[in-house]
Structure formats: C-alpha cells, structure tokens
Amino acid sequence: MQTAIVTPSYSGDFERCRLLCESIDRRVTGYTDHYILVEKGDLDLFEALAGPRRRIVDERSILPAWLTVVPDPLSLGRRRLWLSPYGLPLRGWHVQQLRKIAMAALLDEDAVLFCDSDTVFVREADIGDQWTEGRLAFFRKPGAIGSDMAEHLAWSARAGRLLGTKEETTHTDYIAQAVAWRGDTVRGMIGRIESISGRSWAAAVAARRTFSEYLFYGRYVDEIEQRPDRHAPIDTPLCLGCWTGATLAGQNIETFFRQAGPYQPVVGIQSFIGADVGSIRRAAGLA
Image 1 (cartoon, one colour):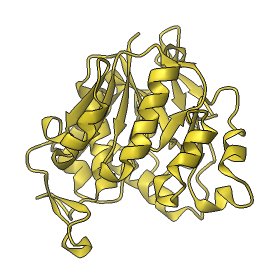
Image 2: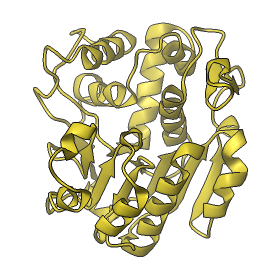
Image 3: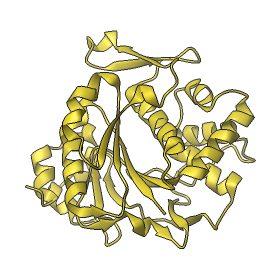
C-alpha cells in the first residue's frame, strides 16, 4: 500500500517546515513523495524545499476557482483572506483544511499522512507501519471532547449535519498534528457531503467557518462508512502535540520532547506559541 506525506503550510511557518523536511529526509522511509501545499504567493519561497521526492503544490491546482485569495486589509496585507461566494471570507487555517481534503482525494496513493508544518520527526520511522494487513491506522479518542469544549462540539455538530449522521454531535475526538487518511475513504466522504448538501463538497464546507476536517473524516469512518476491514483504530496519536503555551509551563522544550512515547516518532509544537526554532532543532537532535 502506497502512502504520501502531505503538509499544508504558509510563509510564516517556513523555517519550521524546513525543519520538518530535514527530519523527513534524514529519518523517514516507506513513503512515496512529500507534498507541500501553499498559496500562489508562497510558491517561490517554498520552491527552495523542493527535491526528488518533495513537490510544492499551488493551491490553485487543487481548489475550486471561485475561492480567491486577497490581502487582509485589517492586517495591512500581512495576512490573507480567501473570498467565497458561498459564505464569509475564510482564514488561512480554514483553507489549509480544504487543501487537505482536496489533495487526499486527488492523489493516486492509497493513503496520505498529514504532518503539520510545525511538526518534526524525532526518530526513525517507516510510514508503511501505518498499515496492518490492508487496514490503515485510524486515530480516534472516545470521550476526549468534553462538554466544556464548545468549539470542538460545534465542529462535531457541523460534521454531523453535512454527513447526515443520526447523532448531531459526538464526544470522540479525531484531531492530531499527524493523521493518516485513506484516499478511497476521503472520496466516499466527499460523495456523502455532496449527496446530503446537494452541491459540491467545497461549497458546502465553505458556507460556514465552523468546521474541522478531522471531524468530518472521523465521523464518516465511524458512523457512515463503518468498514473495520479498512481501518485499524488507535487511541495514541502518532505525534506528541503541544497545543498551548501552558503545556510547556515549568519545563523546557527538551524535556517535553522526551515525553514522546515509543509509538510517537513525531513531535509538534504549535507555531503560534512562539517557541524558538533553534531550540526545537536542538531538542529534535538536528542541530
């Protein structure tokens, strides 16, 4: 079974993405190619990372033409907005999710492993290990969405409505910084969204800014597809993730990295936390 690595990124994450690429080149086997998905304005910058097994993909080649990017006037042009005829303007993190869905559906590989651009491989890893007798690792964590997690519950409810599930929300979480998806499952998910909504999947999703690509996929697998022969559930994410600065309180980055378990060759520290890239490089053993 063939698996590609896919990373959506942008100029603000360039140095972190460079570090991810270096760690993949040094430590990772068992994948076909590494695709980095960026907007048109970032193509020239990211071309420096291209190589024999790494391709820089212009989002215009995978997203619908009606989604257009413009400078955000409220940030004096430092940030971008994506204008849509179907709803409010989208932010970069919304469009990164659309890129993931579109790319996973288009690729010929059997699966994709999404690695956020602020992750890094800290030890050797064979991506082929995500497969077990034709079943792909499927991260799901029952009960992980608490009743106080309003944003997650809203994402779950949106997924439930667009997928036409019996239950509006679920307390199972599917979000992590390194997640594997099957291409055939993604295409089935897209078909389901289009059948329920009566329009293209991108138009249906972009109509609201409340959504999570991982909750779409996870709920589709669990509640609609229901194919245990395709998926091997796991409850420990491939990536040890740091989502907030509070996670690092009282410890340095090296100490946090050492908490990665035996099945976690990837560590991710959200870029908005502002952790020094040099410190991350040293903690990952890539200095």
